[in-house]
Image (cartoon, rainbow, N blue to C red):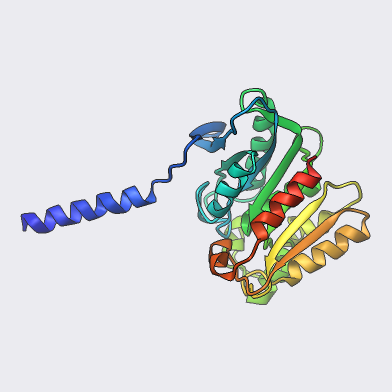
Length: 276
């Protein structure tokens, strides 16, 4: 009995250790905002050298209901570090405990915090990009199309982002996790109206920062058509928008490792060119 308990304890410890993320030079769990009793934290990586450096804020996915600053978006940590970017990865409040617009407000708060602490983290505030995947892609696109003044950024990189939430819900014939985001349970005219209001596609106008979308052509969760339609509307408004299509790519960049895609190198090259 004792040996079984000991084995269970060792297994739990090992699993916990496996879940603990570490990376040289990464400063973790820095509070960037306080929302009621919720402490919002980020991790920061700052390259060696004088700076200031081009900077990226990373926003994880998880259907607006799960995930944290280490979830789903980790494949970008090392490439950005090696390329000499300052970068931050952030937490935000999740549905259904926290409905819209809390998650969008938290991204805006992170942008303001990073700009306010630019000297400390060697941030070039004129070369600040947002990168997000899935739900995080929606959030960085929302910030990109609605940002003004101290929340405006220089570039936006959404990965497989649901830019039109009405289309997403209609494909599934249900609200799913989007219901918690908008505080509604049924897919009807009113919930569609609400989803349309918070869809980045419907807020495109001229004068926006350049966008680079990255999307797999085998994505059955958020179809590639979401990025195709977003690019078309961006260009129609006179904005710069490009899309990298990952052949064979499903939803989630973690599944792209075996495809031999150079999407990371293409993203770095685009960021360097755009944030020059």
